[in-house]
Length: 98
Image 1 (cartoon, rainbow, N blue to C red):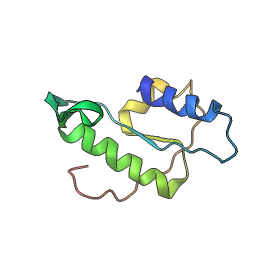
Image 2: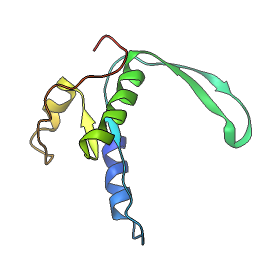
Image 3: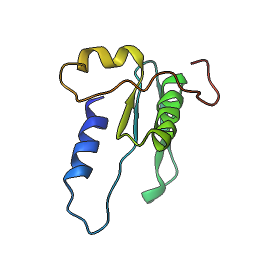
Image 4: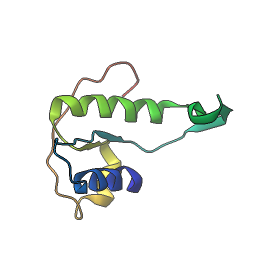
């Protein structure tokens, strides 16, 4: 969670002639990370699980809410007092058991 929130803050601090926007989806849970695939700059890890899929869906939903980040349910509670926030209510999310 900290990394996603820091990313939003860092991008907001960049001085630019064009407005910069960041859309982050934050979810916690089980993630399986596999071996590196590809080579050079295209090298990446294989990542699977419901959690990264949910985070990706939250990031997609951000495009419709015009917010910097969306945090899934109970993950938000420990951050409530430290973040400026507003409830966006229930939203339809494509594919998944959420």
